[in-house]
Image 1 (cartoon, rainbow, N blue to C red):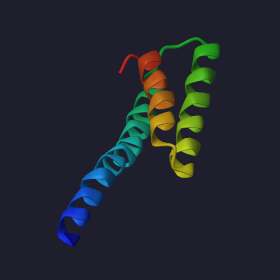
Image 2: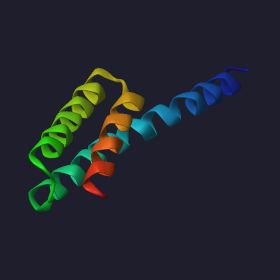
Image 3: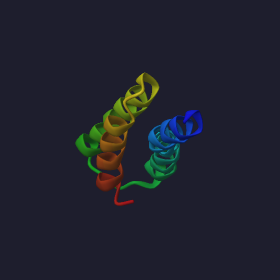
Image 4: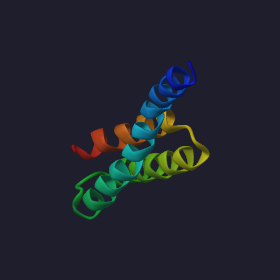
Length: 79
């Protein structure tokens, strides 16, 4: 019985860890694309704001929100 509960708990928490690990990868991709991006000043400011927001959300534990913000930034950069 305890083994089943342990397995269920592990499987329930595994997706959270997977999402948490994606955020730094997304931030690194944005950071790598920023120097060569050809965006307007307004769009560049928006991308940087989304990147910062994504990092803050990641640090606070809101990985879904972080991925949404970082995904929008990546979309604007075309990556």
